[in-house]
Length: 230
Image (cartoon, rainbow, N blue to C red; front, side):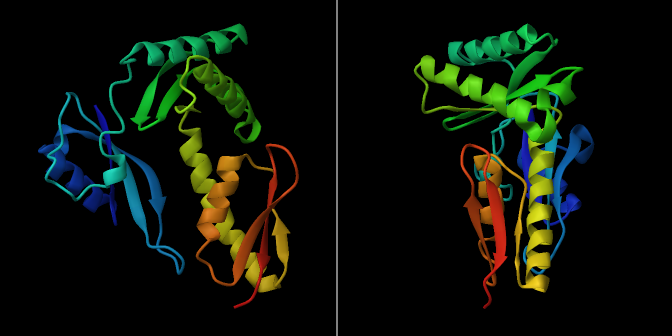
């Protein structure tokens, strides 16, 4: 089983995991998946992924872990016909592209299912800036709609690309904000998909003297970060 926890430091996150799962620290493996250092804009934190050998139900009375991530990461095998159909479809598309792959359930949330692609050709499946991964994901969501599950979003990932991309974009947002503040001008970022643009907008939303807006047409638009003064 796999769970996620968050703390101000790695030690605190591990202690939270041990407390909720009622395990000793040497009874589970820890993977650090995100680190945010303290800055003038944001408090620092460390997010970890905990791997256990057996199915453990966290204590429902314990509130030290991050609520939004509790019980998201579960059994990688499909639990119903819809999940099986999505796994088979994605695997079939990729194999028809000429690449070997295994597909497993990465996460389950309300109206959202994450699928992980395991392949020796992961770099090709991801593509430049994740565009190949986005294209396969779009096909998966269209197929989910044909199965009558338009309300369920399918997220594809490989080699933790999505997490690494998010961390990179958050750093880009703050760095760009500093540059814009120094120049009192604006900077137009690279074309991004809707999720990536929303991440830039959200990251800089609370910075009073900097603003953002999307420019362009189509799916991949650009975000302009500009100085607006106090």
